[in-house]
Length: 56
Image 1 (cartoon, rainbow, N blue to C red):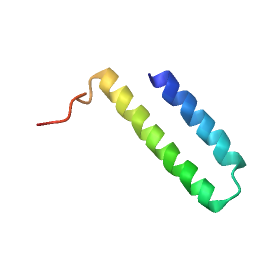
Image 2: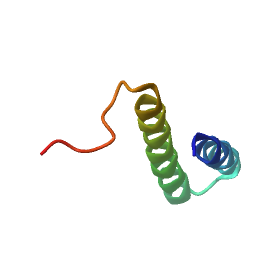
Image 3: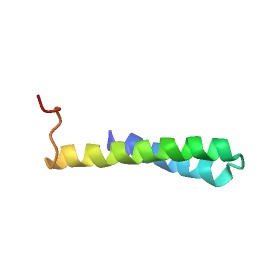
């Protein structure tokens, strides 16, 4: 799973380098932030430093 997220992050970085429109840049930056957070969570869950299930 992390491999797919890492690939998505690289694709978003490439899109961001080529984006000229400020609105498009903000959208890509938001997607990139979310993907990076998702990767961080996936790594933490894999390492056992985060719970996979939300607390009750």
